[in-house]
Amino acid sequence: MRPGDTVAIVAPSGPPSAVLLKRGVQRLESLGLKVVVGEHVLDRQGLEYLAGEDAARAADLQSAWCDPAVAGVFCCRGGYGAGRLLGLLDWDLMREAGPKVLLGSSDITALHNAFAIELGVPTLHGPMAACDLIAGDESGPEPRTWESLREALFGPGTTVAGDRVLAPGRAEGCCAAGTCR
Image (cartoon, rainbow, N blue to C red; front, side, top):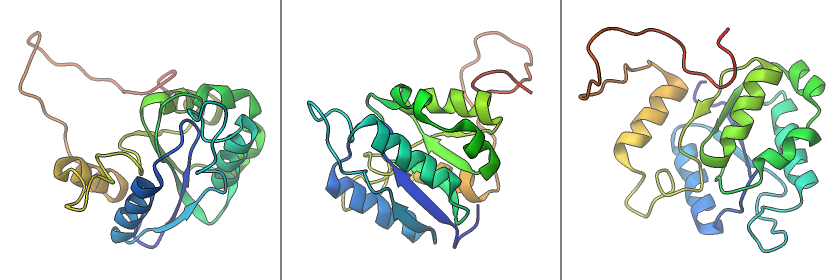
């Protein structure tokens, strides 16, 4: 991605806090991104653990993915409900839209897997727009997470290193939902 690109924020799972969503939008705009928010992001359904009806959440996700002006689709939070959208998405139409960035974690893992299988695109398992790591409080996002997100979106990529080794040796492979291609 590049500064100036447009990202759409959608709510495939639970509803966000309006305060955290606003703060998350501001943080993403501070990266130079243009941000649009899905029509149904602040909807509530049932016991309020879903961000609106399944069809409305699926429509926001599909509309954002298929919009040629949108370079990335960022989920605002996880929770429960993303898996309920899989049968409601027009995968052929989304495939025609071409690749772009999908960002989210938690319940969004269902979408990561489906996007890998159905669309053959890599996705980013990472912090969401209306969650504490990005939206945080007035002092700013969690610094290490924020920098990692910035690098993942705009490059250059960094090597992920650890200080714990379970067994000596070397391993190579891809880390992806679905099948490595």
